[in-house]
Image 1 (cartoon, rainbow, N blue to C red):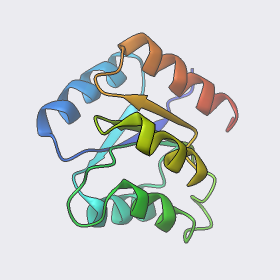
Image 2: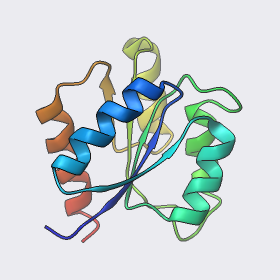
Image 3: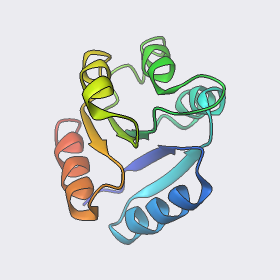
Length: 125
């Protein structure tokens, strides 16, 4: 597997640490952002192959980040997996309509998340 760079956007440090360990063990390179502003900067600077995005973020929620992603031509088609503890009945359709590849409820099963990442990345190779 070619090494893909994944941006993890979540304000929960423990979750970022746990996701980092899982993704690195699976052979992925990772980078991080903790709010909407740092996410936008990381997308522009890091040009990740995939983004794992929380909805409930300070300084611009995940929906704002999804919208801003469209402003960067190099990253406008970057797959986004929304990983959120927020109510899926209210947020899943909005995330998918906003351009997300998938919506997963926290806590997501490791294998389901890894399978979803592989699916999303298979369309970018």
